[in-house]
Length: 274
Image 1 (cartoon, rainbow, N blue to C red):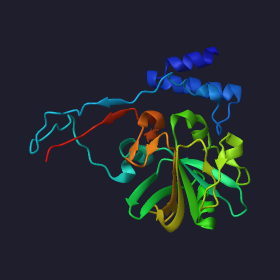
Image 2 (cartoon, helix red, strand yellow; image 1 turned 60 degrees about the vertical axis):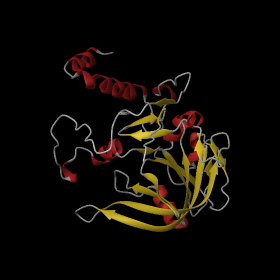
Image 3 (cartoon, rainbow, N blue to C red; image 1 turned 90 degrees about the vertical axis):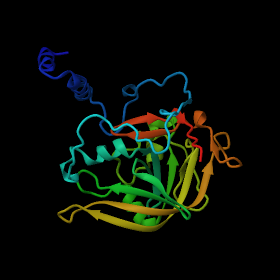
Image 4 (tube, rainbow, N blue to C red; image 1 turned 90 degrees about the horizontal axis):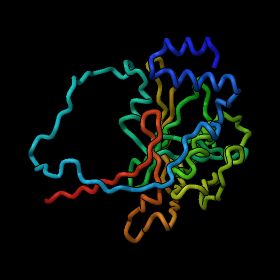
């Protein structure tokens, strides 16, 4: 570490020191900003356990007011938020999903999306919201869905988290993310886009509608795509369709919380008497 860097770190708050150190390492070692490097990932724990925990307030009775948190509730306009994207992800959490598409020229693409969820069970509709790139250009996912009217959704588990989030790399449209990152393709049965073999659960979707969103200045910021699920693929060691239950200890589901990733490893069984 250089003397100048050490002096600058001493002037920083403690919470900023690690950020400054990581930025210095990246700049000095020419580490890729687009494709995560293996040593930057934390080591996985040797075991993954699902814990069934008790309901937090098992003695609660209907009609009894529950705890109101300490502190003052402050009201904001959406535009006043420090980062509306991260605020939404930090409160309205969802699973991490890989959305796969194929271009009009047949080039496969896949990318991670947190704004991806089932919004209606009958008919089954999955909504994927695609934001513009920071420079205002379109993402390959948006271009491909507009061209082919279909997309695939593959759920991310912890055994391939590194490769899944690495698909966020800014690659040119003619490059195949599956091949570049190392994900394995499996053919879908209805749509042309491939699915991710590493995923335990995948959906094939046909586009039914799209909604464009713009900011106050009329500039397009994102497009929400609504796709009807036409096929579902679920690993038989993880999902039992006779009971409708998942083995979450095997699924090792990954969710997105704020700017972080989290494992689902606590299950709360809630049963109320009528």
